[in-house]
Length: 77
Image (tube, rainbow, N blue to C red; front, side, top):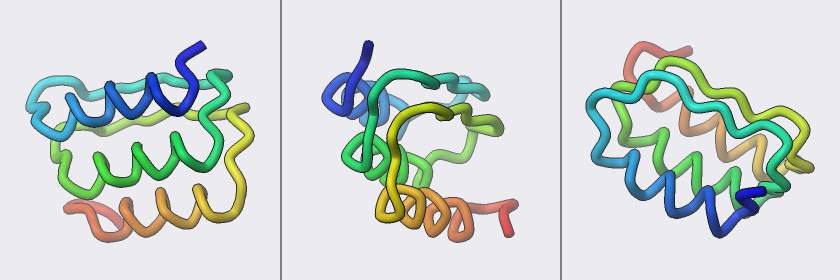
């Protein structure tokens, strides 16, 4: 399992990504902290077109952060 620390490492790398289009991190115990890390990445990543993060125990704070990042991203909302 990645957990929030593992997904933070991946999210930081994907901030500079220009080729990865799909990220599947379902069932990795990300929680809100992991979702916040993904939200930070989503705010600047322009290549990712698909994100799967089901079954991670993400609460309202994490969901709101990801939604805000997606609505602020190009080609969204």
